[in-house]
Image 1: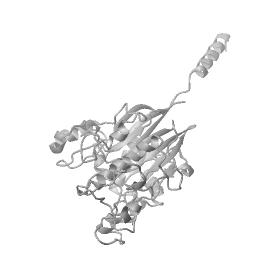
Image 2: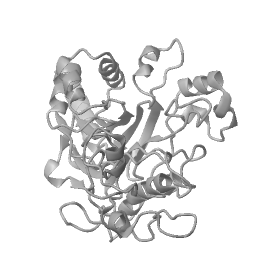
Image 3: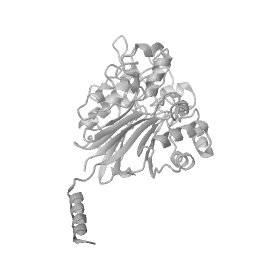
Image 4: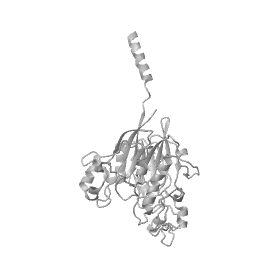
Length: 386
């Protein structure tokens, strides 16, 4: 080796070492996969069998997009379910870590929530679902699951499943048309804000931590003029807006108070059931997050399939104000039409390099898979500063 070669190598190494460290890229996604089943233990049986057609489609979508961190909505709660899902459907996907916890859906409140004159205690009936903390025919229906290729700091997870709606300052508690409270004193004293749960799931990526803020607010429909589901949906969304801004009123299920540390990296993810322009959500519900300076909205996830579907289906879609390229759910054509209700929103501390909705147009790869759910997987690519 000549002196010139040695000098060239030394110069190259010195140049490399002088460069700033490369930012780390990571893909994060959310998918309301419609994996909930109509009866308790039915999802567990489908996962154990390993051949369910709908779950197979869900797994194929996840494999194609290949997110590093994934929130799944509508995954019935059972501690044994995640391991079966990973072993029988996602064995090669590399998800070493997962997090699952109980949900308010189908959890008996012990109170006559819907004021029909009796307290329903037998799971499986509509009366029971209406008296539960969150609508569900059995405990844990429509739950949530987090999958990750990076370490989930389980001992630092904060859950807000039991936080009372009435403890939120200026809560939008529903009122009857005559000006009286919709919920009676007994109900409102125990009524929980979260229809499923709210989780702050810290995930270690390299030497940094990202907080995945996961939830699935109630649909803002199936109610009356009091708009009890619309107002609850709006306040479920507002909870995260308050949390990332440092609100002091928040208390987690372990009794710890306070919000997210200022400057922390976070991702708000979930089927929020609120479109910023269309549908039946409370006015401005989604904007509570979308308009926050703390959130990076420089890219909006979109797809060619969403636009193609809106044009082909017409009806309610023709009168929408929002851009159908950004739709994430294929709902009824007469009402409400397709909407943007699923979100993966990074903090402004993260770089946003790419984003998309898995909604292939007819003829594109994966177009045969979208029948797995009426929702589409939403993903973003972010960079963590070094």
